[in-house]
Image (cartoon, rainbow, N blue to C red):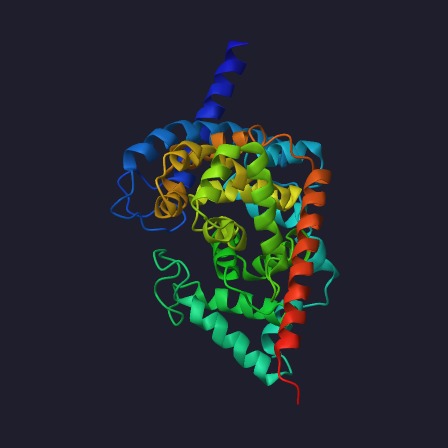
Length: 380
């Protein structure tokens, strides 16, 4: 029994050491494990306090994932209740790409597609020259704006060290794959983070397809009806769950679109710390877009005291801009636990009704506006 106990302790220690090496480059480093440069205002002390506890969590979770994944030899992950529970507690870095591809349906989409579909999209421009020109120009305009503080993207598209070329290819391929959507701002951040984590551009393309084609509401259509409806859903839910917050929002006339639209368009990238984003994505790829609503409500839950102390609209807007500095949101493990506790009750059926109701209301508003525009046009 003593030998078995010692063996387990040694195994835990080894996993802990591995987790440390994979997820941190040292507290004195100016660059985080994902390549983001830490700014002058980065709170090293707060991060060290969080990391000292989180690395132990990673070590324990890695041991359990290794057992389930048969130390990496398991070829396919079937989305069942056990995997769902594991995803909620975080996927180790070494398994993230494989698990995301399986539980999101991205791998299935890739296998069902024609051979070399991704490469074909890159080699064959859209027959509509105007569309192709607009697509390329829109994407290239945003390339240099995408993670300028990340070592993987800051060297320019012509650098061998830069991932900008891969990012351009992924976004171009998606635009050609889905010309009714093309390219929208926000996709660049999602694709860029996918590249950092998954690394393989083709898999990133298919994960982006799974997200936009299957998982997310219509955030990226020209009318952005899905996003606009989502803002109204947030209004409804905050009014129900955190009425004091909504009262402040109403008093100072702060539209949810102003403070929260980026959360959904960018899937929380460049909004909350990267590790927190990835933990949200671990659940998003498995459980769907309901997780985004939970994450949004959880952010509001954590910044509630700050919002209630605001003295005007500028204060409220600034409070929402500073969410990444909130210690509870930095602690991604605590944050994800809160997501599934503090946002309840929130059933899938109720969320579906809210989304349908608000989408119908927006469609009616759009139709009334169109009719008004048609009537105001001078007759010929």
